[in-house]
Amino acid sequence: MNFLLISHGPMAEAAVISAEMIMGKQENVRTLSVTYDTTLESMEKAISEVYEYFGSHDLMIFCDILGGTPSNASLRFKARKPSVEVVTGFNLPVLIEAFMAKNLPAPELLEIVKIAYSKGQTILETPPAVETTETMDL
Image 1 (cartoon, helix red, strand yellow):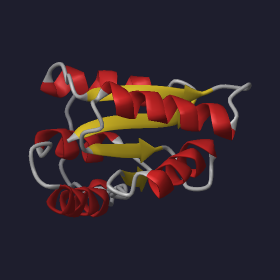
Image 2 (cartoon, one colour):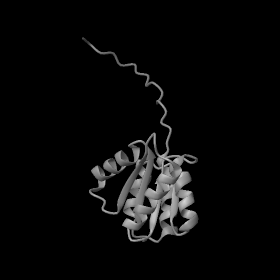
Image 3 (cartoon, rainbow, N blue to C red):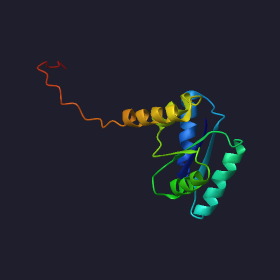
Image 4 (cartoon, rainbow, N blue to C red):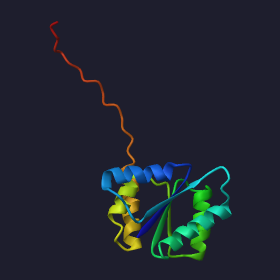
């Protein structure tokens, strides 16, 4: 599987850099960034260019948020290329899992991504203060 990450600003590139710090260089990953002058049409064209770069092989697109230019352009592209997978709301745990499972068929890889999403989100709570009866001599 080849991967394309698309975000508003440099988030996609930074996420790949972070994943590569943990996993090493990923040859099958490209990024695109929405800037102030990006249009839906220009983003869709850029997605098409990445698709062609990968030789029209399996492509999974990760977008930062649902409803933004990255996901809207990706869905328009998917309408022409139904084998392309589009996932929104990427984060580092999801990317690491996807990159590790890149050789699996798309349905299995998507299942791994779903599980990584659910396991990757945790709300940490402050533990209760520990009561102690010990005193410290100074």
